[in-house]
Image (cartoon, rainbow, N blue to C red):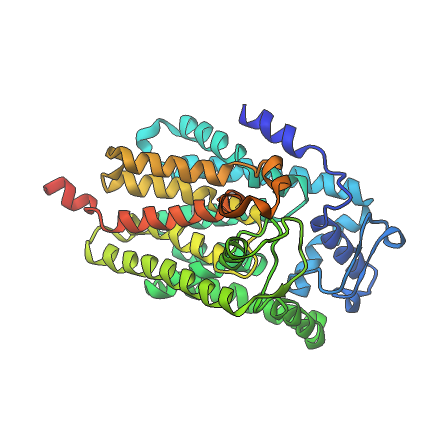
Length: 405
């Protein structure tokens, strides 16, 4: 049923407003034509064979990432987008299979049973449908993150670092996991991560020159101190602004963040970080193996890394799919899934991260008040629950304590 749902909600790809793959296709076309100096320039529209004309700095990645889209430039836009759709589906299924066999607890059944459960869960997530429908790279990065977690759980530290490095080059929220590796002094993983990121950055500068990288940095800096109130931005700043102001659910232009919102955003970020930090310290103090702690650290740190960014698009929350499985396994290892409140909270977190935002909620607009702001921000709330559950898990008895308690 989840695969039927996924096909029903993602097969159509010819939405004119769908900008993500238009940006990638145009970037690949420019590199293929030897016009890489235009990577961050305005473009698109009928002149470039695309539905939309796009402003400057829509391409948000390092210049070298555009090379991955050069093969797509040999196809018409929609043909190329359908190819990426199939690549995304294959990545989702591979990530689900890896989640089932390497992350979900063995108590759920044999490898095939766990894989089926993971496929059902991952393919039912609305962010999975979004990433396929709009031609985003999140499914591929989710596979890299799942493989990273599996490698860590198998103590293949260098491989874990390589995979995390690959994910970090494409999606900035995954940098939070590099911070976790540094905090835990997993130096082999950290060294491998740093090698991948450094080699990629040096190769990018060597191939495209420093000027384009200055343009890339400018595109990132433009979001500092701003907010986009569009409903699919689920960052802390966007949620705070929705709660405190009448916000347009269909506005995607960066606008200055009012001083009061900046203060409130900082307070919420610090509170969430404090809960995470206290949990990380408590997890170390309560003992248990490094792998047991990682099962809780992985989803909590990644969830924080996503929502703390100025922009946290709804499809980013697909990255938490393997993290939800890891969280369930970690809570089970600490005996917390025997408590109905923990099971109920985990189920609510999954539902909040899985559900699409109902159109009637979006149509209600900001006049819906606080209830509207919270309903629109359900992905953020789901991620916050992940951090809270992990923090609770950190304070639970480690498996060795429960065995001898």
